[in-house]
Length: 325
Image 1 (cartoon, rainbow, N blue to C red):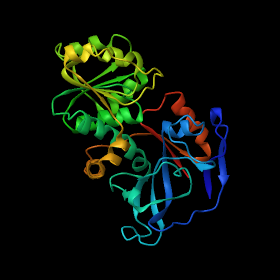
Image 2 (spheres, rainbow, N blue to C red):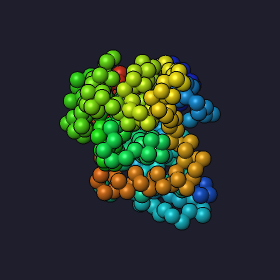
Image 3 (cartoon, rainbow, N blue to C red):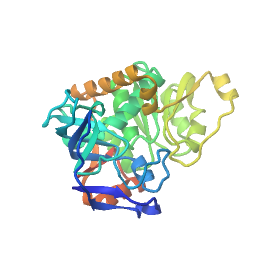
């Protein structure tokens, strides 16, 4: 089968290439899936050069999340039969014609979603759900400011925020991205992510500031966000795409009464398995009901993986890019 295999950890993904490898066999409690689409995520890029916190033994097959059909089941698997349409995630292996995962890592594919959309939603919407519901306990009509709103997780957060009844302000870096967000989701407002955004946020919220701020950017964006958060607000730390991990003087949350909340969706599910299962069930239900809809920026053949990776590196993607093995 074709697979995107990482043999060496090198800059510019030079240690990765399409390889012809044996089709894996499922073991006890495992399912082999015929992959129809695999989403491209930033951790996939980082893992090809050893820059991600998870370090895998070499060689490994890239890819965190996928959609497809159950192809073969191992012993003791009763929940799935060949032909079932599924979505799933693993820490590796999705960017191949077939992958083997624990049966517990699979869920039914929402019927409303095509293969590409189904591959694009699990990680992004799970992160958004853990952030907004578990971390921020967001309420209807609260103001939600989403930074990096055109990215896979950012766009999912705008979409989910609207579904939860929040008043969403989406911040993005370019006019093209802002136009796309407005066209796709029509949030309450779409603003430039330029320095000075706090003034726009304060104006829209009647001087009160945003109740919840979703920040995957860090750096200067985080610093300025502390200047436009409401009293009692929740500032969600999701990542540091800017490259700078910011610091906050504790007198700021003291005086303004806001909380800084770290978001690690996967770790949340590992520490609280029952709540983790509830989180997945909720995003699956929202997708099945059509209340959330992932956006696929581009669908490429697996052979074009370099272009897919480059799209993310150039920061031109609105939503997600998927590869079709």
